[in-house]
Length: 219
Length: 210
Image (cartoon, rainbow over all chains, first blue to last red; front, side, top):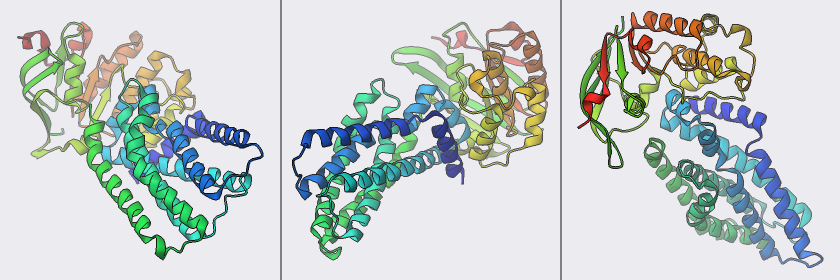
Protein backbone atom coordinates (compact mmCIF):
# COMPACT_ATOMS: atom_id res chain seq x y z
CA UNK A 1 0.00 0.00 0.00
CA UNK A 2 2.85 2.40 0.87
CA UNK A 3 4.58 1.51 -2.41
CA UNK A 4 1.33 2.14 -4.25
CA UNK A 5 1.07 5.56 -2.55
CA UNK A 6 4.59 6.37 -3.68
CA UNK A 7 3.67 5.25 -7.20
CA UNK A 8 0.59 7.52 -7.08
CA UNK A 9 2.77 10.44 -6.01
CA UNK A 10 5.17 9.73 -8.90
CA UNK A 11 2.37 9.32 -11.40
CA UNK A 12 0.66 12.57 -10.37
CA UNK A 13 4.04 14.29 -10.54
CA UNK A 14 4.67 12.79 -13.99
CA UNK A 15 1.29 13.98 -15.28
CA UNK A 16 2.15 17.51 -14.15
CA UNK A 17 5.80 17.69 -15.20
CA UNK A 18 5.83 15.21 -18.16
CA UNK A 19 9.40 14.46 -17.14
CA UNK A 20 9.60 10.92 -18.57
CA UNK A 21 6.56 10.65 -20.85
CA UNK A 22 7.69 13.48 -23.16
CA UNK A 23 11.21 12.07 -23.45
CA UNK A 24 9.85 8.60 -24.23
CA UNK A 25 7.26 9.80 -26.75
CA UNK A 26 9.76 11.96 -28.61
CA UNK A 27 12.32 9.18 -28.69
CA UNK A 28 9.84 6.63 -30.04
CA UNK A 29 8.63 9.07 -32.69
CA UNK A 30 12.13 10.08 -33.79
CA UNK A 31 13.60 6.56 -33.95
CA UNK A 32 10.67 5.09 -35.86
CA UNK A 33 10.72 8.06 -38.27
CA UNK A 34 14.46 7.62 -38.84
CA UNK A 35 13.97 3.91 -39.56
CA UNK A 36 11.12 4.70 -41.95
CA UNK A 37 13.19 7.33 -43.82
CA UNK A 38 16.30 5.15 -43.96
CA UNK A 39 14.56 2.09 -45.43
CA UNK A 40 12.59 4.11 -48.03
CA UNK A 41 10.89 1.69 -50.39
CA UNK A 42 13.00 -1.30 -49.34
CA UNK A 43 11.11 -4.24 -47.89
CA UNK A 44 12.51 -5.36 -44.53
CA UNK A 45 12.73 -9.05 -43.72
CA UNK A 46 10.63 -10.36 -40.83
CA UNK A 47 13.76 -11.19 -38.77
CA UNK A 48 15.11 -7.69 -39.15
CA UNK A 49 11.82 -6.04 -38.11
CA UNK A 50 11.69 -8.24 -35.01
CA UNK A 51 15.26 -7.20 -34.19
CA UNK A 52 14.55 -3.54 -34.82
CA UNK A 53 11.56 -3.69 -32.45
CA UNK A 54 13.82 -4.55 -29.50
CA UNK A 55 16.51 -2.07 -30.57
CA UNK A 56 13.90 0.72 -30.46
CA UNK A 57 12.57 -0.60 -27.13
CA UNK A 58 16.08 -0.77 -25.60
CA UNK A 59 17.04 2.79 -26.58
CA UNK A 60 13.63 4.21 -25.67
CA UNK A 61 13.98 2.61 -22.24
CA UNK A 62 17.41 4.23 -21.95
CA UNK A 63 15.96 7.66 -22.71
CA UNK A 64 13.14 7.66 -20.17
CA UNK A 65 13.35 5.03 -17.44
CA UNK A 66 16.25 6.55 -15.52
CA UNK A 67 13.96 9.46 -14.63
CA UNK A 68 12.37 7.59 -11.71
CA UNK A 69 15.42 8.29 -9.55
CA UNK A 70 17.26 10.95 -11.55
CA UNK A 71 14.34 13.37 -11.29
CA UNK A 72 14.35 13.01 -7.48
CA UNK A 73 18.11 13.62 -7.39
CA UNK A 74 17.90 16.64 -9.70
CA UNK A 75 15.07 18.22 -7.70
CA UNK A 76 16.87 17.49 -4.43
CA UNK A 77 13.97 15.42 -3.09
CA UNK A 78 15.98 12.21 -2.55
CA UNK A 79 16.43 13.11 1.11
CA UNK A 80 12.71 13.78 1.46
CA UNK A 81 12.06 10.22 0.28
CA UNK A 82 14.61 8.91 2.81
CA UNK A 83 12.63 10.67 5.52
CA UNK A 84 9.20 9.28 4.63
CA UNK A 85 9.74 5.70 3.48
CA UNK A 86 11.87 2.62 3.94
CA UNK A 87 14.20 1.60 1.08
CA UNK A 88 12.01 -1.38 0.14
CA UNK A 89 8.94 0.89 -0.17
CA UNK A 90 10.90 3.31 -2.35
CA UNK A 91 12.21 0.60 -4.65
CA UNK A 92 8.78 -1.04 -4.99
CA UNK A 93 7.07 2.29 -5.67
CA UNK A 94 9.60 3.25 -8.33
CA UNK A 95 9.38 -0.24 -9.84
CA UNK A 96 5.58 -0.01 -10.19
CA UNK A 97 6.03 3.38 -11.90
CA UNK A 98 8.64 2.01 -14.31
CA UNK A 99 6.54 -1.12 -14.98
CA UNK A 100 3.64 1.07 -16.06
CA UNK A 101 5.91 3.21 -18.24
CA UNK A 102 7.55 0.17 -19.85
CA UNK A 103 4.23 -1.51 -20.60
CA UNK A 104 2.75 1.68 -22.08
CA UNK A 105 5.89 2.48 -24.05
CA UNK A 106 6.31 -1.04 -25.46
CA UNK A 107 2.63 -1.32 -26.30
CA UNK A 108 2.82 1.91 -28.32
CA UNK A 109 6.03 0.80 -30.06
CA UNK A 110 4.58 -2.64 -30.92
CA UNK A 111 1.33 -1.14 -32.27
CA UNK A 112 3.31 1.38 -34.37
CA UNK A 113 5.55 -1.42 -35.69
CA UNK A 114 2.58 -3.57 -36.73
CA UNK A 115 0.99 -0.56 -38.46
CA UNK A 116 4.10 0.75 -40.22
CA UNK A 117 6.08 -2.39 -41.08
CA UNK A 118 4.15 -4.89 -43.21
CA UNK A 119 6.70 -7.63 -42.54
CA UNK A 120 6.09 -7.44 -38.77
CA UNK A 121 3.56 -10.27 -38.58
CA UNK A 122 3.19 -12.30 -35.39
CA UNK A 123 2.08 -15.83 -36.18
CA UNK A 124 2.04 -17.15 -32.61
CA UNK A 125 0.41 -14.37 -30.63
CA UNK A 126 0.47 -16.27 -27.31
CA UNK A 127 4.24 -16.78 -27.50
CA UNK A 128 4.79 -13.11 -28.34
CA UNK A 129 2.52 -12.06 -25.43
CA UNK A 130 4.50 -14.25 -23.00
CA UNK A 131 7.80 -12.78 -24.25
CA UNK A 132 6.38 -9.27 -24.19
CA UNK A 133 5.01 -9.64 -20.64
CA UNK A 134 8.08 -11.17 -18.99
CA UNK A 135 10.44 -9.09 -21.13
CA UNK A 136 8.80 -5.88 -19.95
CA UNK A 137 9.11 -6.97 -16.33
CA UNK A 138 12.81 -7.71 -16.89
CA UNK A 139 13.42 -4.33 -18.53
CA UNK A 140 11.56 -2.46 -15.77
CA UNK A 141 13.33 -4.29 -12.91
CA UNK A 142 16.82 -3.85 -14.40
CA UNK A 143 16.36 -0.26 -15.48
CA UNK A 144 14.98 0.71 -12.05
CA UNK A 145 17.99 -0.58 -10.11
CA UNK A 146 20.42 0.86 -12.67
CA UNK A 147 18.60 4.21 -12.43
CA UNK A 148 19.10 4.12 -8.65
CA UNK A 149 22.84 3.47 -9.13
CA UNK A 150 23.44 6.18 -11.73
CA UNK A 151 21.30 8.82 -9.99
CA UNK A 152 24.23 9.44 -7.62
CA UNK A 153 26.77 9.80 -10.46
CA UNK A 154 27.73 13.06 -12.13
CA UNK A 155 27.48 11.85 -15.76
CA UNK A 156 24.05 10.26 -15.56
CA UNK A 157 23.13 10.49 -19.25
CA UNK A 158 26.18 8.57 -20.49
CA UNK A 159 26.39 6.10 -17.67
CA UNK A 160 22.84 4.78 -17.97
CA UNK A 161 23.08 3.05 -21.39
CA UNK A 162 26.69 2.01 -20.70
CA UNK A 163 25.74 0.28 -17.46
CA UNK A 164 22.45 -1.05 -18.81
CA UNK A 165 23.84 -2.68 -21.93
CA UNK A 166 25.69 -5.63 -20.31
CA UNK A 167 22.87 -6.14 -17.80
CA UNK A 168 20.08 -6.06 -20.38
CA UNK A 169 22.01 -7.95 -23.09
CA UNK A 170 20.98 -11.51 -22.01
CA UNK A 171 17.38 -10.32 -21.76
CA UNK A 172 17.36 -8.60 -25.15
CA UNK A 173 19.01 -11.61 -26.84
CA UNK A 174 16.38 -13.96 -25.39
CA UNK A 175 13.59 -11.59 -26.40
CA UNK A 176 15.00 -11.37 -29.93
CA UNK A 177 14.96 -15.13 -30.15
CA UNK A 178 11.40 -15.43 -28.80
CA UNK A 179 10.13 -12.68 -31.13
CA UNK A 180 11.70 -14.54 -34.05
CA UNK A 181 10.02 -17.78 -32.93
CA UNK A 182 6.65 -16.07 -32.59
CA UNK A 183 7.02 -14.54 -36.07
CA UNK A 184 7.92 -17.96 -37.47
CA UNK A 185 4.89 -19.49 -35.75
CA UNK A 186 6.80 -21.81 -33.39
CA UNK A 187 4.76 -23.29 -30.57
CA UNK A 188 5.12 -22.25 -26.92
CA UNK A 189 6.30 -25.77 -26.06
CA UNK A 190 9.12 -25.55 -28.58
CA UNK A 191 10.27 -22.24 -27.03
CA UNK A 192 10.27 -23.45 -23.43
CA UNK A 193 14.01 -23.02 -22.86
CA UNK A 194 13.95 -19.34 -23.84
CA UNK A 195 10.84 -18.74 -21.72
CA UNK A 196 12.57 -20.30 -18.70
CA UNK A 197 15.65 -18.15 -19.31
CA UNK A 198 13.36 -15.11 -19.35
CA UNK A 199 11.65 -16.16 -16.12
CA UNK A 200 14.99 -16.86 -14.41
CA UNK A 201 16.31 -13.45 -15.50
CA UNK A 202 13.27 -11.71 -13.97
CA UNK A 203 13.51 -13.64 -10.69
CA UNK A 204 17.28 -13.14 -10.35
CA UNK A 205 17.14 -9.42 -11.17
CA UNK A 206 14.19 -8.79 -8.83
CA UNK A 207 15.87 -10.62 -5.93
CA UNK A 208 19.27 -8.98 -6.52
CA UNK A 209 17.65 -5.54 -6.84
CA UNK A 210 15.83 -5.82 -3.52
CA UNK A 211 18.98 -7.07 -1.80
CA UNK A 212 21.21 -4.37 -3.30
CA UNK A 213 18.91 -1.39 -3.05
CA UNK A 214 19.58 -0.73 0.66
CA UNK A 215 23.29 -0.30 -0.04
CA UNK A 216 22.78 1.81 -3.15
CA UNK A 217 20.18 4.05 -1.58
CA UNK A 218 22.12 5.01 1.55
CA UNK A 219 24.90 7.49 0.90
CA UNK B 1 6.11 12.18 27.83
CA UNK B 2 7.67 9.79 25.33
CA UNK B 3 10.66 7.71 26.32
CA UNK B 4 12.81 8.19 23.24
CA UNK B 5 16.59 8.27 23.38
CA UNK B 6 19.48 8.45 20.95
CA UNK B 7 22.94 7.28 21.93
CA UNK B 8 26.09 8.17 19.98
CA UNK B 9 28.88 5.66 20.57
CA UNK B 10 32.45 6.45 19.50
CA UNK B 11 31.23 8.30 16.45
CA UNK B 12 33.90 9.15 13.89
CA UNK B 13 33.41 10.69 10.45
CA UNK B 14 35.94 11.24 7.70
CA UNK B 15 35.29 12.63 4.24
CA UNK B 16 38.16 11.12 2.29
CA UNK B 17 41.20 11.91 4.45
CA UNK B 18 39.60 14.92 6.13
CA UNK B 19 38.49 14.30 9.69
CA UNK B 20 35.12 15.89 10.43
CA UNK B 21 34.80 14.77 14.05
CA UNK B 22 36.34 12.14 16.24
CA UNK B 23 35.02 9.94 19.02
CA UNK B 24 31.72 11.55 19.94
CA UNK B 25 29.95 9.83 22.82
CA UNK B 26 26.66 11.32 23.91
CA UNK B 27 23.17 10.38 24.99
CA UNK B 28 20.10 12.43 24.05
CA UNK B 29 16.90 11.82 26.03
CA UNK B 30 13.29 12.89 25.51
CA UNK B 31 11.92 16.01 27.16
CA UNK B 32 15.00 18.04 26.34
CA UNK B 33 16.40 20.28 23.62
CA UNK B 34 20.00 19.58 22.66
CA UNK B 35 22.17 21.81 20.52
CA UNK B 36 24.94 21.05 18.07
CA UNK B 37 27.16 24.03 17.36
CA UNK B 38 30.35 24.85 15.54
CA UNK B 39 31.62 27.15 12.81
CA UNK B 40 30.77 26.64 9.12
CA UNK B 41 32.15 23.34 7.87
CA UNK B 42 32.57 21.90 11.36
CA UNK B 43 30.22 18.99 10.60
CA UNK B 44 26.91 20.03 12.21
CA UNK B 45 24.83 18.91 9.23
CA UNK B 46 26.95 15.77 8.86
CA UNK B 47 26.29 14.83 12.48
CA UNK B 48 22.52 15.36 12.24
CA UNK B 49 22.44 13.39 8.97
CA UNK B 50 24.24 10.53 10.72
CA UNK B 51 21.77 10.69 13.63
CA UNK B 52 18.90 10.63 11.10
CA UNK B 53 20.53 7.65 9.34
CA UNK B 54 20.78 9.60 6.08
CA UNK B 55 24.51 8.93 5.87
CA UNK B 56 26.77 6.41 7.58
CA UNK B 57 29.50 7.20 10.07
CA UNK B 58 33.05 6.07 9.29
CA UNK B 59 33.15 4.35 12.68
CA UNK B 60 30.87 4.07 15.68
CA UNK B 61 27.16 3.60 16.20
CA UNK B 62 23.95 5.54 16.65
CA UNK B 63 21.36 3.69 18.71
CA UNK B 64 17.76 4.88 18.66
CA UNK B 65 15.50 3.56 21.41
CA UNK B 66 11.80 4.01 22.07
CA UNK B 67 11.59 2.92 25.69
CA UNK B 68 13.67 -0.26 25.91
CA UNK B 69 13.06 -1.20 22.30
CA UNK B 70 15.71 -0.47 19.71
CA UNK B 71 14.26 1.36 16.70
CA UNK B 72 15.40 -0.37 13.52
CA UNK B 73 16.77 1.78 10.69
CA UNK B 74 13.91 0.58 8.44
CA UNK B 75 11.36 2.12 10.82
CA UNK B 76 13.25 5.24 11.85
CA UNK B 77 11.43 7.52 9.39
CA UNK B 78 8.16 6.94 11.26
CA UNK B 79 9.64 8.16 14.55
CA UNK B 80 11.53 11.16 13.28
CA UNK B 81 10.79 14.65 11.95
CA UNK B 82 13.52 16.56 10.15
CA UNK B 83 13.86 20.16 9.01
CA UNK B 84 16.83 21.61 7.17
CA UNK B 85 17.59 24.15 4.44
CA UNK B 86 18.74 21.30 2.14
CA UNK B 87 15.42 19.47 2.43
CA UNK B 88 13.17 20.01 -0.60
CA UNK B 89 9.47 19.36 -0.94
CA UNK B 90 7.72 18.70 -4.26
CA UNK B 91 7.38 21.96 -6.17
CA UNK B 92 4.76 20.63 -8.57
CA UNK B 93 2.30 19.91 -5.74
CA UNK B 94 0.40 22.25 -3.47
CA UNK B 95 1.26 22.36 0.23
CA UNK B 96 -1.77 20.23 1.06
CA UNK B 97 -1.03 17.69 -1.71
CA UNK B 98 2.53 17.36 -0.41
CA UNK B 99 1.25 16.63 3.09
CA UNK B 100 -1.37 14.13 1.85
CA UNK B 101 1.23 12.27 -0.22
CA UNK B 102 3.68 12.17 2.68
CA UNK B 103 1.04 10.73 5.04
CA UNK B 104 -0.03 8.12 2.48
CA UNK B 105 3.54 7.05 1.74
CA UNK B 106 4.19 6.70 5.48
CA UNK B 107 1.15 4.44 5.57
CA UNK B 108 -0.67 6.78 7.94
CA UNK B 109 -4.07 8.35 7.58
CA UNK B 110 -3.86 12.02 6.65
CA UNK B 111 -4.78 13.98 9.80
CA UNK B 112 -6.63 16.88 8.23
CA UNK B 113 -7.39 18.56 11.56
CA UNK B 114 -3.77 18.50 12.64
CA UNK B 115 -2.64 19.70 9.19
CA UNK B 116 -5.11 22.61 9.31
CA UNK B 117 -3.94 23.48 12.84
CA UNK B 118 -0.27 23.45 11.79
CA UNK B 119 -0.98 25.36 8.58
CA UNK B 120 -2.67 28.03 10.68
CA UNK B 121 0.20 27.99 13.18
CA UNK B 122 2.79 28.76 10.51
CA UNK B 123 0.47 31.14 8.68
CA UNK B 124 0.15 29.07 5.48
CA UNK B 125 -3.51 28.08 5.64
CA UNK B 126 -4.63 30.63 3.05
CA UNK B 127 -1.93 29.45 0.64
CA UNK B 128 -2.41 25.71 1.21
CA UNK B 129 -3.79 25.15 -2.29
CA UNK B 130 -1.00 27.04 -4.08
CA UNK B 131 1.80 25.15 -5.77
CA UNK B 132 4.95 25.06 -3.62
CA UNK B 133 6.80 26.35 -6.72
CA UNK B 134 5.25 29.75 -6.04
CA UNK B 135 6.29 29.89 -2.37
CA UNK B 136 9.04 32.14 -1.03
CA UNK B 137 12.01 30.50 0.70
CA UNK B 138 10.57 31.48 4.10
CA UNK B 139 7.21 29.91 3.28
CA UNK B 140 8.92 26.72 2.14
CA UNK B 141 10.86 26.65 5.41
CA UNK B 142 7.60 26.99 7.39
CA UNK B 143 6.00 24.20 5.36
CA UNK B 144 8.93 21.94 6.29
CA UNK B 145 7.92 22.25 9.94
CA UNK B 146 4.49 20.81 9.12
CA UNK B 147 6.23 18.04 7.15
CA UNK B 148 8.31 17.28 10.27
CA UNK B 149 5.47 17.44 12.80
CA UNK B 150 2.42 15.99 11.04
CA UNK B 151 3.12 12.32 11.85
CA UNK B 152 3.67 12.97 15.60
CA UNK B 153 7.35 11.97 15.74
CA UNK B 154 9.18 11.31 18.99
CA UNK B 155 12.48 12.66 17.68
CA UNK B 156 12.76 16.06 16.02
CA UNK B 157 15.94 17.16 14.29
CA UNK B 158 16.20 20.77 13.23
CA UNK B 159 19.23 21.80 11.20
CA UNK B 160 19.37 25.61 11.04
CA UNK B 161 15.65 25.82 11.84
CA UNK B 162 15.36 29.59 11.49
CA UNK B 163 17.15 30.02 8.15
CA UNK B 164 15.14 32.14 5.68
CA UNK B 165 12.60 33.10 8.36
CA UNK B 166 11.53 36.59 9.39
CA UNK B 167 11.28 37.59 13.06
CA UNK B 168 7.66 36.45 13.37
CA UNK B 169 8.57 33.12 11.77
CA UNK B 170 11.54 32.67 14.11
CA UNK B 171 9.39 33.33 17.18
CA UNK B 172 6.81 30.82 15.96
CA UNK B 173 9.56 28.22 15.45
CA UNK B 174 10.91 28.79 18.97
CA UNK B 175 7.39 28.37 20.29
CA UNK B 176 6.95 25.08 18.35
CA UNK B 177 10.34 23.76 19.46
CA UNK B 178 9.63 24.53 23.14
CA UNK B 179 6.20 22.92 22.87
CA UNK B 180 7.54 19.75 21.21
CA UNK B 181 10.36 19.43 23.74
CA UNK B 182 7.83 18.96 26.54
CA UNK B 183 7.12 15.46 25.26
CA UNK B 184 9.73 14.63 22.66
CA UNK B 185 13.43 14.71 22.00
CA UNK B 186 14.57 17.78 20.06
CA UNK B 187 18.01 18.26 18.51
CA UNK B 188 18.93 21.65 17.04
CA UNK B 189 22.03 22.20 14.90
CA UNK B 190 22.75 25.87 14.48
CA UNK B 191 25.16 28.78 14.77
CA UNK B 192 22.47 31.22 15.83
CA UNK B 193 22.75 32.22 19.48
CA UNK B 194 18.99 32.58 19.78
CA UNK B 195 18.48 29.01 18.48
CA UNK B 196 21.04 27.61 20.89
CA UNK B 197 19.63 29.58 23.82
CA UNK B 198 16.74 27.09 23.89
CA UNK B 199 19.06 24.14 24.46
CA UNK B 200 19.72 22.29 27.68
CA UNK B 201 23.09 20.93 26.53
CA UNK B 202 25.25 21.76 23.53
CA UNK B 203 27.71 19.56 21.66
CA UNK B 204 30.49 21.85 20.44
CA UNK B 205 31.99 20.08 17.47
CA UNK B 206 35.29 21.98 17.64
CA UNK B 207 36.09 19.88 20.72
CA UNK B 208 35.91 16.68 18.67
CA UNK B 209 38.76 17.40 16.27
CA UNK B 210 42.15 15.84 16.82
